Amino acid sequence: MRRLLVEDLVRVALFEDLGRGGDLTTEAIVDAGREASADIVARAGGTIAGHDAAHAAFSMLDPRAAYEVRVPDGTAAAAGECVAVVRGNARALMTAERTALNFLCRLSGIATATRCLVDAVGEHSARITCTRKTTPGLRVLEKYAVRCGGGYNHRFGLDDAALIKDNHIALAGGVAEAIQAVLGRVGHMVKVEVEIDTLEQLRDALAFPIDAVLFDNMTLPILRDAVTVAGGRVLTEASGGITLERIPEIAATGVDLISVGWITHSAPALDLGLDVSVKGVSSC
Image (cartoon, rainbow, N blue to C red):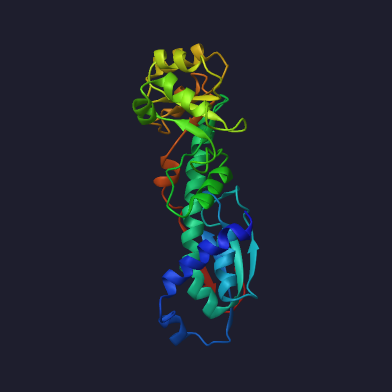
């Protein structure tokens, strides 16, 4: 993940934490010129994501800070394993600690949740994708974390592709009317996907040159029938009520994609901590 994409987000987070007075506790206790080393350690096992954001937090307060990655993004860390070592000005390390860990824990939690779903797909070919249900302002980071977990990204925003949903269909007066309106407006490079609730809607949609169909909250028997009707002519996506327990049977229906909102909006953070070395030497 390029630093250019994350620096503004990290800067805002540091401003939020430092407020108007700075780090009152650290500045009272730690000498301004003191150097230190700290280990970032996984308190629980999971998939790591977010090193660039963590590194940016430290280096914005100490441009000379050195950040050594021990467990790269997209790689599994065991409980107790050191995932990174940071060295630099002690005040900077202490002041940036929470901001760095907030990003690293949050993104690693998303990557870990995604990896669990990807592994649960097993031998089936379905790909796990995220949605636009992301934390406002953090979408680019959270979607990156999904990729670190082995998942794929859906559209990043409303301008990436046309996704005709149930409310669009209702306002347009029907599936055909909605598709015709979109095809008459978007350019030839824009993908078009249609949310489908029934097999009748699917047959109506397949009469047009669309690219994908989204099967929303379908039962397994209907989902299997829908995949059969689609017949490989378009990408098929299942969404709604997706859980880790249901993933294998959903993937077994033959859908191409399984989109999951909770991996970005509700994934628990991975527990990571920062341990400062008093002697200034890493313990890992």
